[in-house]
Length: 276
Image (tube, rainbow, N blue to C red; front, side, top):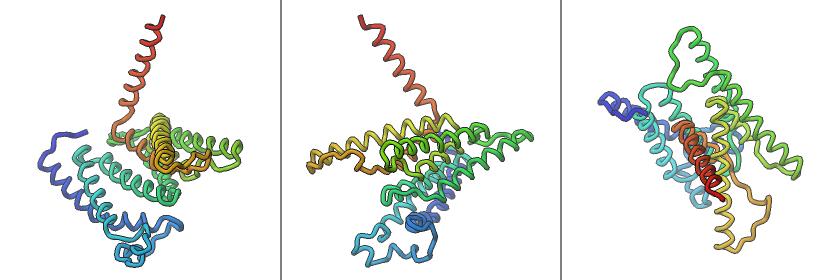
């Protein structure tokens, strides 16, 4: 990451923040319009002023969330430019962050992930890596974010195939859906953009985060409300955890995870060697 902020970079970050702020209403529009039919209608631009929706407690009503979306978009755009400079990494940082925001909110509210983000996401990822692979072969310098097309294709197949196989096994054994199709397509998009190794890291991080929150929620309900745990009856949106795992790997790379594995391996070896 670029930590030296020059006057030019600060000005570029300010411009990026302004553009991100202008994108705020469109982000709110996408969040409101995607659940259900995935179509844009101008009516959703007026949701913030819907008095009836506010009375009913409608998810889409109210201006506060629009301001938060716009602030998130502006800050993300500015910080991306400061961290990565002017290049593909900064652009993708904003795109991925906004996409993950939309996926998280929609999945938490309605337990769905918009196909236009996941399916178009893996098409765009394969096209991006394929085009840059051809350009580099022709003599072009690689961009900031570069994944060889072979890794991208393997990541796409692994991402979609792994969760798809888990979903099929869950259906075969439990006779009910254990993994949503949206999660499968989202992880395929992650693989297309990041490659096969980050797919594995995303799965591990998402599984850990989802398990931690899920167990904590079950315990909280048990202790606070006396609600008994019923196996296979608690739905947990997995999209937000996939997004967090994906963004962690995108921003910090694989090195932190490799270091954790090395620390764990050293701890295990020390315990084995010290045992009588």
